[in-house]
Length: 283
Image (cartoon, rainbow, N blue to C red; front, side):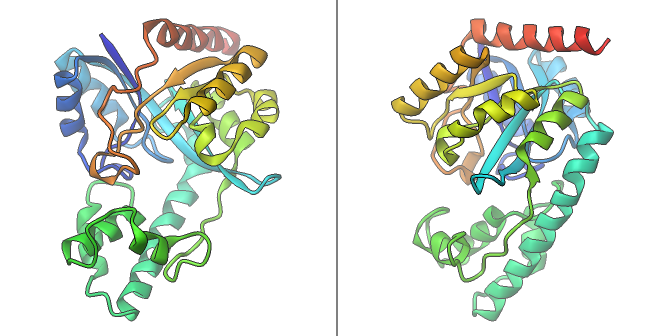
């Protein structure tokens, strides 16, 4: 009985469909799987039904792309057991989804102008069934056309680096505390994702004030030091410790196996208990 609390599908920036992820979950012996696509709850109801048919508990989740404006850092907030289609989530994340797709179109235009033989139609085809085109889809095309062999190698940095990438178009993110509150409003449990990756440890007290309930300790991009810092903050602020592989298939920053950062049933049960207690408070 394994748990996976952080994975993406083709609905956002994963390379595998939900059906393909579900097959991998079965193969890895995962019995509880949280689907946490970026900024959307699209298709979660169908996923939950499909999981039930296979004996896999699908936890309806989300990963909101947010920002710490005080420290000028990106912050990702995971939400567990959110209500699919919740109005608060839609109002907060809907504009970001539209904006990201448009930014990708402008980036594709820049690539074409720079002489790369790709088309926007090809990018849209790769993102079919999802919420829009991501940079990963553009990189997928560049790999297919032979411009590079790596998703996150030198070419990615040259084109899409936030520090002067030649094709980069910035996004306007929502604030991290708004993301936490939206997840709570949607009946979910808000958890700070991979704080070591973006250097978000200092933001924890403010996020706790907004209603943060957990912190991701175990993650493929976390060093031992990151895990220790996250554990200390969890103890200090009464946060549930979670973990997940942040699975994106071929679109991941690091090759990971689904279920490889299982936080264990004890921590998963604590997360479930937190959901139950939040639901009781809402009543």
